[in-house]
Amino acid sequence: MDLTAPVDDRLTVGDPRVLDFLAKVARKLLAPAVARRHPELGSLGFFLRPAELNRAVARMQRDDAIVFPRGNVFHVPPANVDTIFVYSWALSALAGNHNVVRISERSAAAADTILEALNAVLADADPVIGRTQRMITYGRDNAVTAALSQWCDLRVIWGGDAAVEAIRKNPLRPSARDLTFPDRTSWAALSAAGWRAATPAAKRDAVVGFSNDAYWFDQAACSSPRTVFLVGTDTDDVRAEFVELLLEVVDQRGWAVDAAMAVEKRVNAYGMAATGAISAMEFPANSVTAMSLTAVPDAPRRWIGAGAFPFAEVRSLIDLVPAMNRQDQTFSHFGFAHDELREFALALGGRGVDRIVPFGQALTFSAIWDGYDLPSEFTRLTTIAS
Image 1 (cartoon, rainbow, N blue to C red):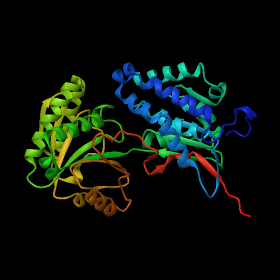
Image 2: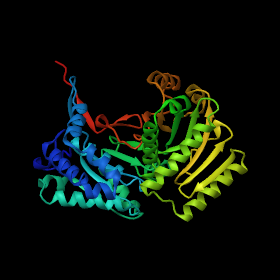
Image 3: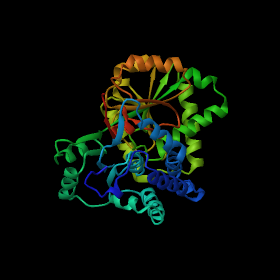
């Protein structure tokens, strides 16, 4: 809430005008024609449904304090995941903040579709939305970033270490602070025993979910799996069946990787082989590259191309603990019992991995992200003692 704004422009936590606006945007994004063209927008529309929004507002409420908007929020989302700005902005707007979101000039078609939906709903929305919520695009103009950094009470920076470091060169006011989302790496784990015990339908559902996690954003999203850990012994049969089914699903879904990307993946694979990180590689199609890691610590944390999957075998999830670090974000899985996953999380002790989710949910945004409780981050508290 901008305390210098006219009274009519001051929003509250869970402001009904914002709730109404976001719910109408959700309906636009959930339209069948939009969801078919951009499947990731269906997930976004689901997140913006009234029931989900009301749950987020409930998370903001406190019994021991009065909850207020944090104030002015400046969002700098990444270009490679062109829906993330809506999740960040929507939760902040729901908290009653005035928001400015910088939209990258390199954003893809899905971002344009989102902006079209926002503008269409804005035409009939309460005018306070247009006065307090802005989406802007500008080039590498540091003066604009500097001015917005001085304006805001909270600066939200997505997009990796380099982006965080570059934007942090612009100072904030002493009372303001940063919320940062730097480079992250995510993994997938497949229980050999769980896979062998699964029905053909369950296996296919798992691979469909995995393919969504990997291919929606060309495997470049921070929560997309970079390496597949096969947990068990003598897992060659599990890997072969998984890759075969992945090729079939990717082909049926129409996810293509162009020749240039296929060449880049091949170059990266040979580069890893030259360092001794991988012992074998397969190129069954442009869409899938499978590699055999020599050792778990060799699992790459950098993006090596869309549809590139190093595989490594370990006897148990606990064997992965030494290889995890604070950069690691999402750990997607199939075939494990809840107790196994809990034991793994406890062994990590908060040193790495913020999310443990089933295949198909790696890209599902939630109010708790990268270890932050975002509804809390976007609000501030006043306590009263008497």
